[in-house]
Image (cartoon, rainbow, N blue to C red; front, side, top):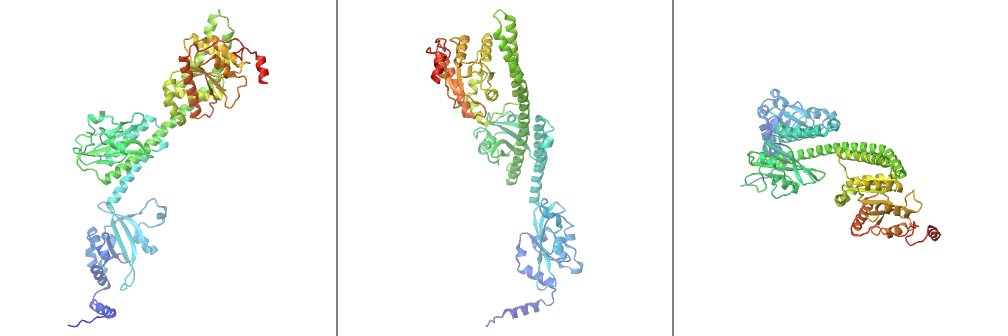
Length: 588
């Protein structure tokens, strides 16, 4: 038996003779059904004429739109429009936020026929089905004019996900509208967030049980903020950030990763939450990588949560974190405003209060010992002035808890316990230094009294001694402005206290030479005194730490050294007997 090979030209002639009685559309259908990539595509494909009638469709397209098969085999003049076959679907832009889409026609057929360019769109059909569609040019040598290739991809689930995420974002965006939130109190804002979370959980995501806990870093606790469907035991529980014995909440707070419990009866991490819960999903609420809280949702069915639910939960947690951050910023904004008001009030009353105290102190020193009533009245004036300033600071702390500067936080942690509730007297150093010192010691919970002159300081000490209210320490410049010889102030200081002297810290400006050797002379009289530099203005934590260390050392020395003050002769600047003139000549 002999076989003869035919060339391509002969095969083409035979092929055409076999199909002589078929229309071009029939030939195309035959070719596409016999051997075509489009026939095997998972997306629906159809060939549509420019007059919008279908020529061919693959099996997937016919599954989605069954009426197509009848139209394809009918005569061309009787075929329906492709849009009519699909029950006249609605078209929308692929990306509604894309500004370039605004000049395009959302109907991809109209867009293609107008521009002769490929077009994309989203098609919504009856029965809530959504397709992503494309229209491209399609040609064939047997056709007199080009056709259109219509590709449809079932995006119903993707669109539902997109809409769901959009709804979550819009609801959370409504909860974080700053201009509106400013109209409410802090408590109302947080209640607004709580109601919004419960609404999203119940009405939008349809969670059976929900609990949201906020992280308290000072105690490591996860405190309940919003919930529904929880049992009594879960409501009373306060887990901490620990993966052991704190359920999935403690575990997720430790790992900062979403955890799905498929079966609550078999999962070792699960602790009873929702009544009759059989599965759960626990999501960390993170802002810029830091733990803010935990979102835990549960279901009465096993394996109720899948990857899609994880996506919803993590998106919701992200949105909640942003809202919480905004609410905390608004609270801080209010705190800063209150603190500013308190500081402004204090600055306004500080000068007149200081003048009253100084004048009262001057008069106090001019009274005779038998003028007891006048002394008592001046004493009450000074105390009232100090009390007024103290009350303003306390009001500021109560209305707006202190926000400690990052440079000071470590010092507050280290020294707060020792200095909290103590009274310290600061002499000299200038108003700006005293104001900054006042702010810093307030962070420590310490009450600071400031005196500008040596005489003012001595008067305050006398009053404190009469009131049985000793100073924890005295911080004083080595050069009181009202003393010609510096050491004389410290001799006068000893006359008040004698041997039972408060701890003494000598303050000196940075890089200033002590010509009169005041620090040396004073420390001979006060062996337990310490010395330190004093500029508080613009100081960082390191300089404040030195001052606190020296004050602590002076306090310890005062406890161990008895007597604290050693009496020498009465020469001002020299405990060894040299006169002031001799000292001045030596300095020259």
